[in-house]
Amino acid sequence: MKAHIAAVSVDSPFANKGFADANRYNFPLLSDTSRAVAEQYAGVYEDFGGIKGYTAAKRAVFVIDAKGIVRYAWISEDPGREPDFDAITKALAQLK
Image (cartoon, rainbow, N blue to C red):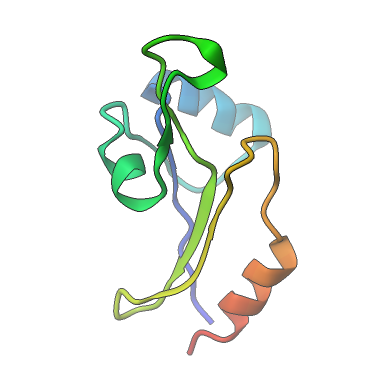
């Protein structure tokens, strides 16, 4: 099975690079500073943390097959919640 991982964050490219380096990520972390991708795919939190005007992306995971079909989607309403990594692994294993 072949899979590609990419992460999208509303943080700046500089913050993403620091985060990737600190966590030793070997996949791209893309910057969505306009929040366009977040709004289209997972949604956003307006006035996040009680900070007026601060928009943060919801935490989400998508497994997309080679034809561009979403085979697994997880979007959390709780920004502190981690995804079910076993479910992601199972969804990846079902790709052909």
